Image 1 (cartoon, rainbow, N blue to C red):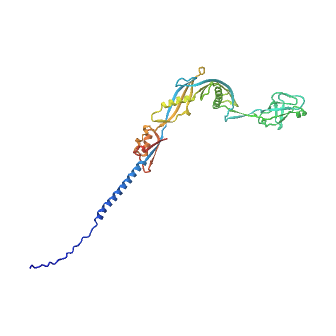
Image 2 (cartoon, rainbow, N blue to C red):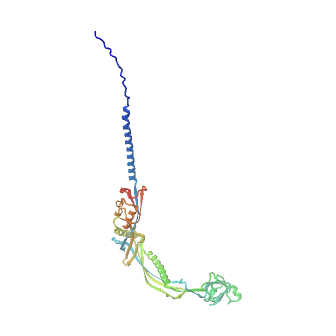
Image 3 (tube, rainbow, N blue to C red):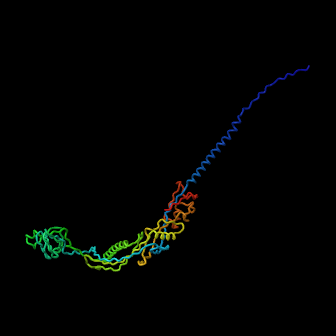
Length: 397
């Protein structure tokens, strides 16, 4: 019989390795990476946004104080009853001659006091039933005892009165009296109560002054008298018009001039006589303004614009007048002021890209475009003109 082998079994202890949760390790790395990528993306987006905002908001405003340039229109226009061409305006021509003499008092500082006889007017009243004749030089005595005399003889009617001129018996300031009552010493005491005189205004001219006449005073007197006659003549000419006109111009020609004294004379007053001829040209001012404006725009350069056409300073000189034909020649001069416009090549914003304020100021002042340039930057830390032309603004002053 076969022999049985007994096999002894041995237990072998098997150590189990710790179970590692691989899913946790393999998932941790991608999440961290994703977070970093997301953060980087946010930073890039924010930076881009900042850059976009910066570029979209940065700007520069260039304020230019422009140098004005004079544009002169100088031409001749003809006034006629019916305007038929560009160089004509409708109008009328009138003439008048005025002559007068006027007295002037010197105003010089070198005056000499001269005593003279004061004069005035008195009212002589007669309450008797018969007239009272009074001869020239009849005495009249004021209440203060100043003696006057009648300049001319008068007859005072019964129960009536007359006005007569009297003069002081003595020269000097004593004759300058206030209004007062007078008695007539030459009449009997009884008549003195019935015939008396009274003054209503003060008597003057007891003292008068003479001055050494200067050439300047003569010239001033002639000029003021000429201006007075000129204004009188203009009023006369305006009254002769058959139509209404919005424009007028005058010329004056002195035909005769006489002065009753010469420089260096010692006088209390002097006379000036003038005889002047005044021509008046009346015209359609609106039509003239259109012609003048056209002439000005013909002289302006490209890239300029008017800030003032100079209408208020227009000068018109009457060069020739023919009153019979009703025509005249007017010399017109008008000066306008122009400055560079936004389309001027000198103000092209592309010229200023990358420049600082002082560079822009130096450039435009040297070129005679501006007297001063100021640049306002935004944001505040910007110091050069942006490269984006549509972010650069020019203001012309």
